[in-house]
Amino acid sequence: MTYEQACSEHAWNVPERYNIARDVCDKHPRDKLAMIHEDPEGAIREVRWGALQDMSDRFAHRLRDAGVQRGDRVAMLLPPTPETAAAFLGTWKTGAILLSMSILYGDESVRHRVTDSEAKVVVTNEANESRVQGLTEVLLLEIGDLDDGPTGFEMVDTAADDPAQLYYTSGTTGLAKGILHAHRYILAHEEFVYCHDVQDGERFHGMGEWAWAAGISPLIGPWRLGAVQVVLQREGGFDPHLQLDFLSRHEATNVFATPTAIRSMMAIADAGTRYPQRFRIVCSAGEPLNPEAIRWFHEQFGVTVLDYYGLSESYPLVANYPFMEVREGSMGRPMPGWDVAILDEDEKPVARGERGEICLRARSNPHYPLGYWNDVQAAEETFGGEWFHTKDAASQDDDGYVWYEGRADDVIISAGYRIGPFEVESACLEHPAVAEAAAVAWPDERRGNVVKAFVVPAAGHEPSDELGSEISAHVRERLSAYAYPRIVEFVGELPKTLTGKIRRIELRERSKGTDGPH
Image (cartoon, rainbow, N blue to C red):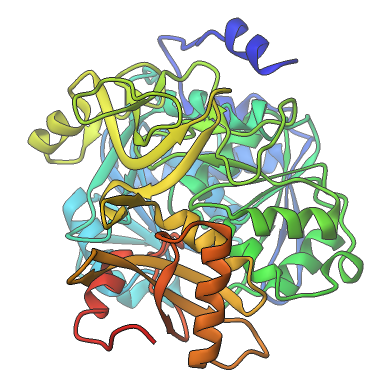
């Protein structure tokens, strides 16, 4: 297959009546393996489709007994276990709307999501029960709780356009907004066809938490295609040694990894020999993937990471594919079936090579959201026009490859030059002393702004003025005399959203009042 063939042969097939749970779970043979789960103590549990079908039926009965009806919101605050996956499926079987929350959320974030969504119930475990008491009715769900009870739940006959999923944005300012998706949205997640090339029965692992699009979609999307989910339930923060050891032991062949996870692995010099893998396809999304990370991964494991791009509102818009040349640093080309364009402020296409905003033609695919939860005005402003504006800046080369240049409001304008923070950060990361980097605009009387880089030094490297000057010179040599960071500030860590995206707005605020160039 070629990219051109994939686009020309593509057609959306959205049935009028559709329920995620039937397509993802109930259609599979009962004796076929669905999941291999490893808990924090290392205990391994194999779950077949028959067990998952029965557990999801039992959970649907529990919701019905609690008074949950079609269209009600069911919030969840749970770790990634077979019971949690069954609860997702059971929620959809009742016709209710799933709202899954991260156990990493602070109490205020949990409260906001539960109250804003007007959730009928919150499903959690004893470890998190105190965090949700008093918000709404609480249902406890522990390991083994769905092993017994009535099955045979009659799935609600939902339309493809009926609401199914509520994702809250991880925004950098203000309260998070709920994005409402219909059952049909999973039909548009064809990255598991075109990018991951998921095969029936192969072992798939997704590193995203089951609380947002980059976590839940890599769970249910591969399941539609018959994959076996290999799930790691860990405690504490991300451990690259634990992650790579897990993937090696369970012989995962198809993986979704976040860029942050890949960059964390780069600290392991002998990763490829220490943790031999059987990777066939590895993809990444959620934030920009730097060329240096792609090169390191290929050197260690012999696989080129395929980057793709999207947002909670709709994703993926743009991707790399195993049947297409990968150009390091590019997000790839628009997904087959997705009407994506790089537009100017007047919604006119920009010339090839020129900077514009990534836009998606409204209502052009099944993933397009129903709107924002309880905010009709914002939904109309964002989704009601001819184009959905991502607020992400990019350019497109002569072959149609899309090159990310940062958030539209993150662009650095210095002496009239427009500088994308991503290219500066990528160049910084090529220096061996840099573990992480973020570039922002810094006020300057003469130039208006200059580039400032916040740098997390790599292990074994101590911050110094000399090292800062060396990094600046390194970037200048690779980019230009106007795009290099004239200021380098060393920090212990970069502020990030829960999905791993750098909070540049916080860095811009932090930089006010600090010293000038080193």
